[in-house]
Length: 228
Image (cartoon, rainbow, N blue to C red; front, top):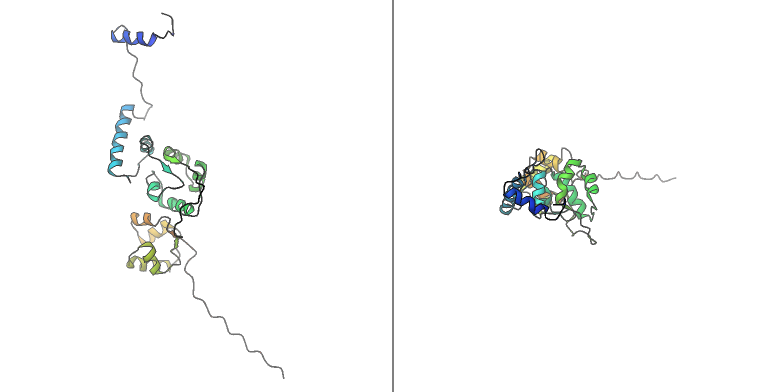
């Protein structure tokens, strides 16, 4: 039989079936990587978890790849806080920056924009990439209320706009009197806010220079002397 003939694969299978030649060795995964069967089981398990909890946070790059294989995608220029926080290692202050820029109509055109904006390492960027989509929209982002400046707003605004209870509003006002809040992480640490409450503030607050001081009266002008 000539080498490379189209019957070669069929003849090889027949010879293996009759025991005349040994079967080829099974393909082995790369060191540290699961086999195809193991990967399929892990992907099916993740699909079950996602069905039970659509807001499930992915733990590592492997779960990101499985989620991408299941059809999950994250639209960078329209993603919600919950979408971003599913990504492994994505921090609330990064999501806050993305949401405030999105509210201002800013769009990211590719992975380089995202990496520079958030200061991502190459490993973190590669971990997220299977899920990311950079769709470009001709129209501006949906209009949202302007972020509330927690360093300058009143306690009433905190309760009405951010739905904070009165004790937390009063504590925020007292604490900012010692110095303006720098960012979400500073706000969380100084007020000891639970994570779910901090996540609810993403994109809804800003951090200005500090409370407006009282308007001081101008000194009265000295009376002019009349010349004799």
